[in-house]
Image 1 (tube, rainbow, N blue to C red):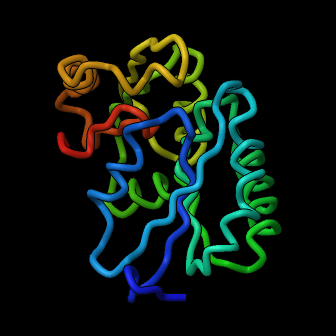
Image 2: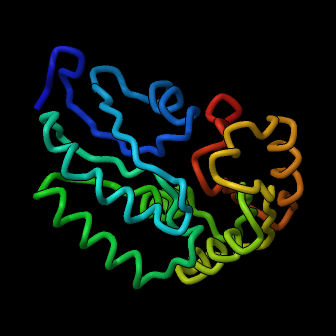
Length: 194
């Protein structure tokens, strides 16, 4: 339902409470006439991020929203196509019929839209997190031609990775046989770089 600041619509955006980069970035990307309403979930336990995001969904329904955006890369956490299907179903139940998009699904749609085939992927967390994401995108039919991890010790510390290191990581996975660069995760604050 449009409001004074969002005559075109109201979007409830779910982001980690510890991630100070995401709210300003969503504002940078916000289309004119859209009101972003931010809802935070806790990432103190990286293994329960999905559950933490689900807990917040019912609260979003109180802002007369038109859509929900789940801003978290679940594919970095021992994820699979089956888990994503289950998770999407749980999210749908809690959203009570409101349209929504999850970051994990949005990335797949974006890669298909740009015609990605061979991807160079950069992940902020551990090698294990990066491998989970590689496996997930490979299951969707993409070739992950190169992958690197920044080895940030905990998700809450990813907001402070220097931009120079981010650029270096993209260069590590960029080669002539890569047609698309992918950053998995939303914590690095790279919208101005893009």
